Amino acid sequence: MQITGVESKKKILLVEDDSFLAGMYVSKLNLEDFKVSLADNGEDGLKLAQEQLPDLVLLDILLPQMDGFEVLKRLKDDPKTAKIPVILLTNLGQKKDVDRGLALGAEDYLIKAHFMPNEVIAKIKKILKS
Image (tube, rainbow, N blue to C red; front, side):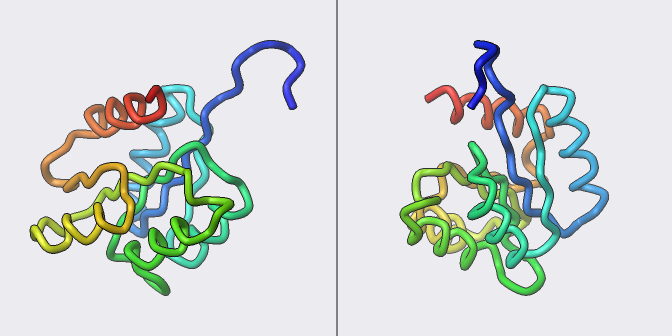
């Protein structure tokens, strides 16, 4: 618990196996004053989410060990993590994938090729404010 009265940084968990993209997003999020944790596979992402209880999860779908759909399902099934907003950030753009992600409880579904990092950050801020 923080006693200073200063608002603590919002915690973002990024689950992304592409090291270039992950590095770029970690840098951008740090510049925006977020505290960022990174996992490069679905299993570690799920474990970190359960341990750290971040304010928001930015989740890729195509991941080693456990895909993002399964991570999302498990997060939403667990009462401890069910309320954490999840943004899917992926290259899967098929309508069935988007529908599945939203049906599983994702707050938003962003296709990497269609969004610049600053647009993703704007979405994160909007979701954290609501």
